[in-house]
Image 1 (tube, one colour):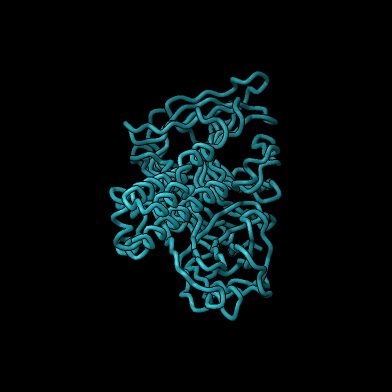
Image 2: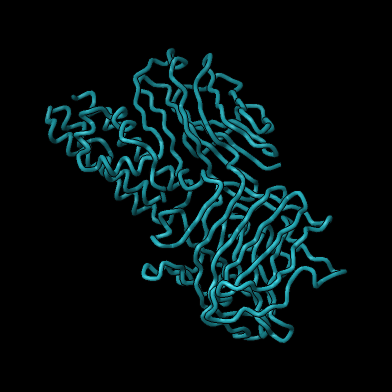
Length: 477
């Protein structure tokens, strides 16, 4: 019993590691509160109870510890886990199941990856079974995606999957806002007052106010798109009111935007959508209300250098003169095909075809982009000659994108060296990295090009003693 409870205690501590690491990498604003909530998972009460053979007390402390740790993981935005009852049963055993008590069903939902405690001498590590899973964390500008494995070369070995990857694995995603969207990875950057989820209507209330700083309601795509990737994006949009020219000395129009952006570029202090040259890495639907030249719908592309996809010899080809009126439900669908570099946009208004909307064809001198977030965007009018204030609703957001660059991730030690195995994608470069503290990482393998199939990465030198964490770095060339 004591051994099983110790295993359960280690599982609770592992859950804490997972929660804290997840918050660290995803920069969740509520990290201090989450750390307070998991403060009970320090192990001391459990250790004391075990030492004094107070098994009942140990069970209680273990249940509390796991509950707090799992609460923290849920705060980080986990999707419901597909881990079944048998998996957790194998992790903490029959007594561990009893110790967790009412938290058992919650653990089934919250744990996305195995937390396995196994006793193995260091020289027997090569006999351990592979660790299975997949994990991606997208960080934008450099086209970076990471899958993380960790291994501690000690007598008590923990193999942990530490990332909140449940929200990132799917190549398609649907959001109907029927329940709190934060649980599915949506987060606000900037002014939180501009985006309000309405539980009664099951939709997102949005204010586009260009007098405020750049603000986004956004969610990771689970991959990084370039102009070589097909995608679709569709959503519902209803405008309650819209006005332009309200900012002093900015009398002209300014856009409402929904689309894809680069998570790092869009949050840079130099990112200014209104200048026409300092807002790189964008693929988005723009609507400009009329300020004397006609209301305009513009499916826009901006490359990594901040250059718009705009044909000056045929300026009318980039946009469509068409007014979107208030209190009408618009359905917008954007579908990009990489083979012909064309995005086709279709719309309906209260179910009736609306348009047509001009296709956006990428020019031969257009660069490339890297986008990793779907975003409902309220841009600042800094540097612009126009301004906007509008209120409306967004609902039923759907996107389909290529698979994540790392899937089927597995790892094991072979001849004293760690080797990662995973399914790769073409047009990505992969490197195995190692860290002793989850902060400082170094490459430990030769960079390898993805081949669309299984790829192996092996560290080139015998690792140093102590705790070791491994991840796969994926970059777009």
